[in-house]
Length: 456
Ligand code: ATP
Image 1 (cartoon, rainbow, N blue to C red):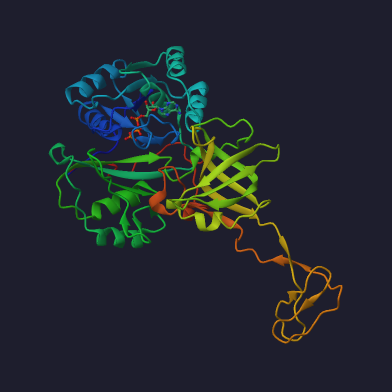
Image 2: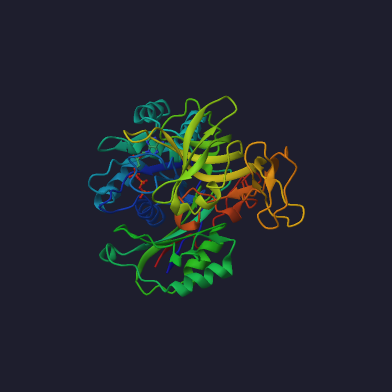
């Protein structure tokens, strides 16, 4: 095994953004990043100043292949002038781009990232941004780039460059398969996953769905990823991966610093009146129509915000949140994180709920017949203005006795409810991570864990 450590090169930081090198036929942008990193570490005098960043962008983009991931590599190298040319030679030589993909590879040199690129990156997390805007920014900041196909990949590559991820973040150690194994079934003893999950919780997450007995670290497609272990530090994800006994001979692994598991796409409060499709955000609002559970087990209801915007919302069956959502009543105060589904001929715009926080369950009153004072059973009405009679003991109430108003016990408790792990998106923040958020405010220099990159 070859393990890479730091060298000491002093020159401007090079930021390489990559996106859309894959298609449904295969390949993977993180694998292209792995190969480029290997090339840089093997052939150039390179010092990585951060882990490779794996940035999940707006998950509601309809033209994404899978998880809308883009990558940024940040390093110092002795010869930064024509780094793009050398990377492009490698990309072509090693055929790192799938046919049908729309790759974007961009290179920015400089010790700080222009504010306008950071704003562009922030927007790409929750909104739709144009490749025209990405090109305009690249040109304005002398960013050299390569694009192919429809050029959309430049959006992700520029957004990855613009993301510093100084706020909450997690890590993922991604292990890659050898080319000849891609497309075959991934074999891994689930008992090992259950064991390390128990040993490392809460510092690794989304390894195993205990409720549905499902291993969550293995993808299922033809791409070169064997498995990915997510957690709170490079050390813990590396250690957990290296302990796994994987019978298949792998190509290697690399640790990414990522916004996965942080809800970073849901940080913007959205007014519901003029909400745009494909965007993501949160709203503090009230239930406006009582949820109904439709075929398929999904709960549908509408919500209203404090400026009167009303929109439909859906809680889908696989999230396991329907049992909570279906108990909501009109007037309940809630906070929801959501992505906006586009309208179709069958339905209007819908908020696809990604988490539900019940802030206040409204007191619900109902009108019922009085109790029999002897048997403590509800009495039966004898007709309008004729009073009530106990069915058990026959006692009659006074003639003008009235129905009474009582407060109905609510079956919903206040609190935060997030989907079950198998329904998580990459960005979904697991419930146990609330309170575990970290940032790099007091870490001006990132020291990389010695085994962050490995050829096996
Ligand atoms: P994988 O997760 O396997 O790497 P993917 O799901 O990232 O695949 P891509 O093939 O990269 O999918 O396709 C996503 C495309 O959408 C890219 O071209 C990317 O530049 C673009 N894109 C990403 N975010 C936005 C956004 N907010 N607005 C517009 N386009 C976007």
